[in-house]
Length: 155
Image 1 (cartoon, one colour):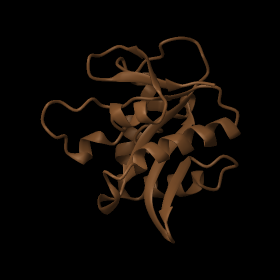
Image 2 (spheres, one colour; image 1 turned 90 degrees about the vertical axis):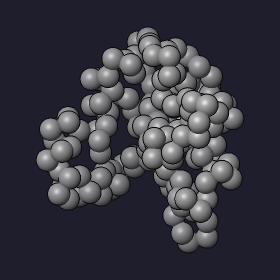
Image 3 (cartoon, helix red, strand yellow; image 1 turned 60 degrees about the vertical axis):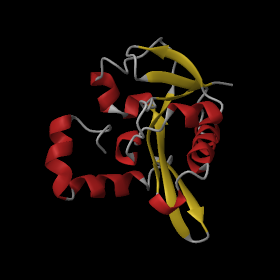
Image 4 (cartoon, helix red, strand yellow; image 1 turned 180 degrees about the vertical axis):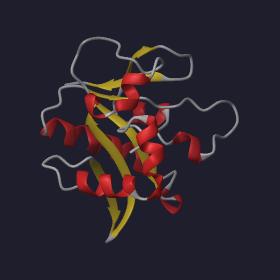
């Protein structure tokens, strides 16, 4: 919910209101993202929704729009620790694009991080990595910061 709510609203909701708000979103006509399963266990998550659903993007100088196109945004990507480094992020991104297109998206956009020369702790890669987006078929569409490209998968 950090990207969906104004900062003050998110901070105020840390006591449990954010969880309740996310739970409500799962009952919407279009869910707030997709889950990856191994058997019956949920092992991954990818948040994807129309860009306007994310208040944070309206406030970000680094992730401001690169044009006037309507896009869906991938805002969060998570894979449980035992399932990392097995290509699940790439599969989640591909599935997010299919999901968004089924719900009317023409362009799906993401905002990955580019790890430096040292291994990046997973906690800092919650928007996904550049290499995962490339492997999932995204291309760099623009950049307002050296370390935060704007990647797109388009029809």
